[in-house]
Amino acid sequence: MANTKLGLLASQEIPAQTREQFAHFFRYLTGEKMASAHTYAAYERDLWRLAQAAQDKQLQELAAHDIRGFVRQLASQGLSGRSIARSLSAWRVFYRLMIRDHHWPLNPAEGVKAPKAAKALPGTLNSDDAVGFLENIPDDDALAIRDKAIFELAYSSGLRVSELVNLKLIELDLPQGMANVTGKGNKTRIVPVGHAAQEALRHWLSIRPEYARGQVATVFVSKNGGKLTPRAVQLRLRHWQQELGISEPLYPHKLRHSCASHLLQSSGDLRAVQELLGHASIATTQVYTHLDFQHLANVYDQAHPRAKSK
Image 1 (tube, one colour):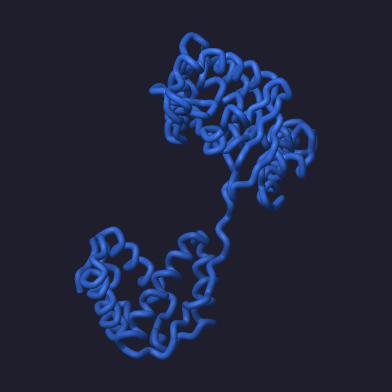
Image 2 (cartoon, one colour; image 1 turned 90 degrees about the vertical axis):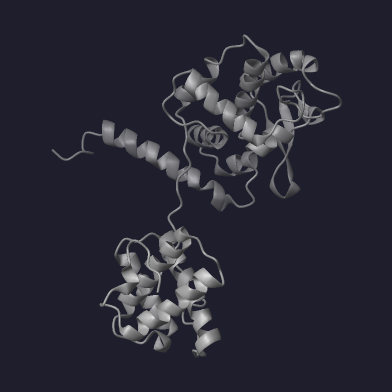
C-alpha cells in the first residue's frame, strides 16, 4: 500500500486484516479515482480515526450504533462538526467499496449525522468605524465617487453584493428614499435608502452618463463602462482598506452585517431587520441577536461594579 508522509495506516496498532482492507481501498482511490495526494492524506487521516475507534472490532461487523458512538467520541475530543462530517463521508465511501468488492452486509455510516457545526458570527464594524470609513473615502475621481455610493448603499440598506451590482436605475427612487431590490430566489423587496447614501448616489449619478457604455441599465458600472461584477466590488473594498490604512479586513458582506447589527442594537426590532435583509426565515436574522448580546456583555463587563472577580 502506498503511504503518505504520515504513514498512519501502516501502523502495527491496526489489525492486519483491517490494514489489508484499507490497502484495497487506497488502491481504488489512487487507481480508479485518481485521487490527489491531498485527498489521499485526508482519507488516510479519516480512516485512521475509524480504526482507532473500532479498536479490535472487525469493521464489517460494525453497526450504525457503533458509528454513532464513534461520532460522540470524536466530539468529546473536541473535533469540530465539520471535521466529523468529513470523516463520516470518508467512512461511507470506504464501506460502499467494501460492499461492492467484498460483499459486506451493510454501510453502518449511512444516515449517521455529524453534530451541527457552530455557526460563525458575521464580522461587523462598530458604528464609529463604519462612519469613519465611509467619510474618509475622497470624491476626487470618478471611481472614488462610484465606490463611495456603492459602500454607502450597502451600509445604508443592507444589500448583498449581488444586489448592489444588479440594481437597475429604474429600481432606484431617490426622491422617495427607497430602492426596489431583487434578492435570492428572485424575490423583490423595497428597502429604505438613508440620507448619506442618497447624497452619494446623486453625486455618482450626476457623472455616470460620462462613463456608462451603451444601454447598460445598472446603477453602477465598471471603469470600462460595462456592468460591474461582485469581484470588482470586493477588490475595490480591499483597495480602500489599504489606501486608508485600515487593519481590519473589509468585504461587502461586512457592510451588510454592520447595517443589520447597528439597526438591531438601536431598535431591537428583529422582524424589521429581517425584512430589510430579505431573509426568508427569521432564524437567519437571529444571528444578529447574538452580536447584540455580545455588545451588551462587553459593556456589562466593563461597567458593572459586580461583573468582575476581585
